[in-house]
Image (cartoon, rainbow, N blue to C red; front, top):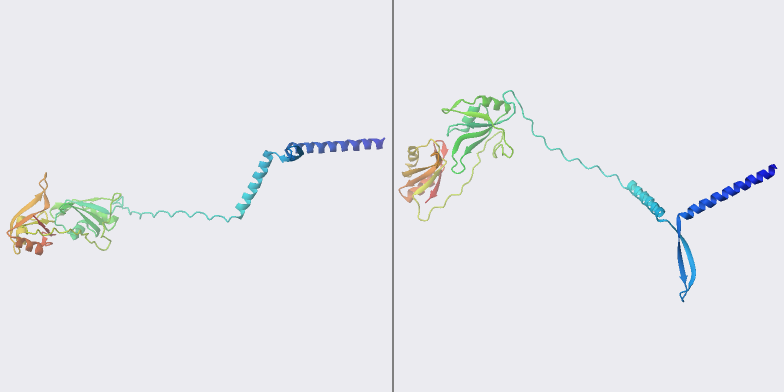
Length: 294
């Protein structure tokens, strides 16, 4: 009996194993599809039918994706590591301002107003009580006439604060005004031609008017000091070419002198001599500019 039971058990195991193989084979075939190819003879009759199994599209696509991923991973591993991008240079920080009790903003540029027309650079430094690194006089664009106001650069923040305290002092008989005037965005400051050691006045070369072919009895005179009088002008020209008449140019609405005018002479020869010998001569502390006019 024992032997018969063992044989029955072995038969059952064999049957189960056979069934599992059958299911596995059936599952494998379910993932495949067959493609039939017909081979025909010369008369068009089917000679042979060939079947070829084809894997399903979904399974084939998965394998392609896996293969593509393995290739990409291999390429990434073989490629050298990219160097990190260099960080852009940090913008240069502006120099820190020195703030003092008398100068809470640390400004070193100052405005000075109500100044005498004939004030010199040294007198401006004396009025501020310190060395000035730069001076920019405010003048009329047309005539070049000084308006009695300037922008200056003090030696440091402490000196600027002390200078502002001197506002209201008497300079040439006038109470001078001194105030902080930090440069605004777009301002060119310090002005070109200025540095911490020297101040070079920026000159504008003006093209001279050609002498009229038949000569002229009149000259234009510019850059005249506000305090200059007819008597001062005649005294300057008398040794070279006596002046017949003087006509000053003034603002249309205010009547204020614009620092320029016209001189008339007795002959063309005197006009030529005055221009040749006195152009750039000093009158009341300023160098006058002469030019031909009709």
